Length: 314
Image 1 (tube, rainbow, N blue to C red):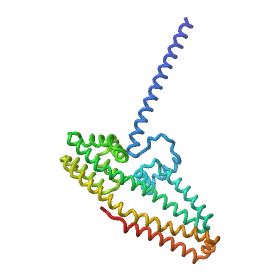
Image 2 (tube, rainbow, N blue to C red; image 1 turned 45 degrees about the vertical axis):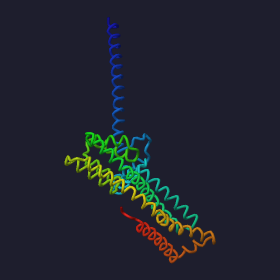
Image 3 (cartoon, helix red, strand yellow; image 1 turned 90 degrees about the vertical axis):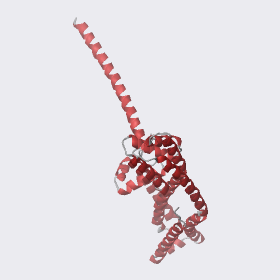
Image 4 (tube, one colour; image 1 turned 135 degrees about the horizontal axis):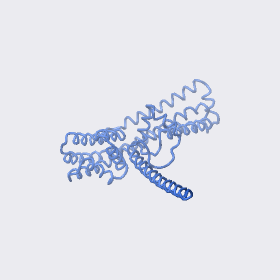
């Protein structure tokens, strides 16, 4: 009798254990699914990434994001569309600076090591600006089509939130990706004004500011947005053609702005190649070092002035 009770108890405990194991596996699978869904949403709001790759330098990245410069860098990286965290970009930039420092010191003279490192920092920041500007230009090129889709959707009776989600599905990157972020921000409780405002901060341009202002005011006042979007579409098409013509006309001037500092740096290699050790002797005295610094400063001023003179706001 006691043996029979022990068998029943053992069987009951085994069944209970199996039931708890099944329940635990089910709970674990559901938790993973919820976490994946949350990561997907947060990736579109810019708070995390859904690429699945292992992020490097996590501690440095968290510390960097707490600083004002880190927040600006994070916003700029989000505008470029690059799959790089602020911590990773900082480490890669420092590695490039160290490499340029050694190359400049070995190929020219020890005095040029720090200058080459500073040029590396400038080049990295310029690369980010170039990537961001290129993405902004692509986004501006898609604005007329985006305004047309929003106008058609709202004219069909759809809500503005639904129209934005439809435009995110139909448009290619970068407009589709940016509107998908706006859609996911609205899904997690952000207001229309905040979500569109963050979009304008990520991709600053006059055209986008006008579109965002039109959508926000129409959504807040409950006005008719179709007519405004129709007129805005025509205006954006005209501005798109004007910007294209200006960019074509100024392409030679922009190339000249980059050619000026390149010629200056090339002349240093030419001098050192003609007479080995000439740069060592030139930078061996305070006067020579001051002359080199002044020359680099003048090249930088020339670059900035040419860029400023060729900038035309439309």
